[in-house]
Length: 259
Ligand SMILES: CCCCCCCCCCCCCCCC(=O)SCCNC(=O)CCNC(=O)[C@H](O)C(C)(C)COP(=O)(O)OP(=O)(O)OC[C@H]1O[C@@H](n2cnc3c(N)ncnc32)[C@H](O)[C@@H]1OP(=O)(O)O
Image (cartoon, rainbow, N blue to C red; front, top):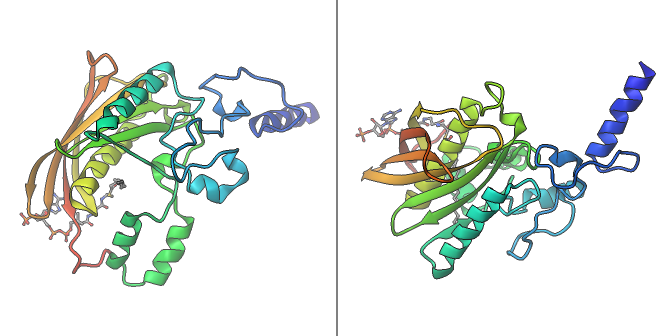
């Protein structure tokens, strides 16, 4: 019993990068917690990006751009990210930063839909964006890029070990989450604050855990406040179509309260 407690504490010490933990492989994406450098984002040059171990400064984690490469990213993920960053140099594509929690323009915009702005502010101070709520490498690792001319958002996504459904493959709910997040971002960039009214997904092939996939979304049609979007998820070599989805997003009516 004592031995198992010591062993558990030792494991926790390793996970938190504390002394006493046995060393583990430095670049194992399946054990990001045990990588002492795993909390660091490599590209810290962008505005708003914080250098150092974010776990020691929780407010900094909230404000750190989490869509930048980190040690849990596979080679495929890094290559795709670099390709899209290259495409962004001429301005046709734009890298969209992503935070656990941050008062962005969207946060400001949504306040008007709540009758009690003070209560809303309190709630928001505790809130985290769902796909960013798991620790680095364990859940949703992704970066999004938007093309304003073509009304398209591309998400490069690597699903970590905590997103398992059928053993070895991603959970359908995790896939749906990333589809919704990508379509939602495409919608918000296109028309402002909007919510998912309907989402229809066809799961065609299972997505292996830890693999990198590309979610391609686009605006198909706009009818007043209604925005119809579709997307597909493909393998990096584009040969496998894993999922397809269609959706309706509705731009919120400033006259209507959400609660
Ligand atoms: C530069 C950096 C940028 C970065 C940028 C990143 C931003 C960061 C993005 C985060 C991205 C997260 C993405 C997560 C997105 C969610 O997960 S949202 C959560 C799930 N969705 C919900 O909870 C929504 C619940 N539903 C509702 O609140 C309301 O039904 C809605 C959707 C707001 C619509 O209500 P409403 O505004 O009162 O609309 P209403 O007047 O009833 O209907 C308007 C029209 O839509 C139609 N409609 C409404 N609902 C439906 C429906 N379910 N089916 C079919 N038609 C419908 C109506 O029939 C009507 O059609 P018309 O008669 O005009 O032809």
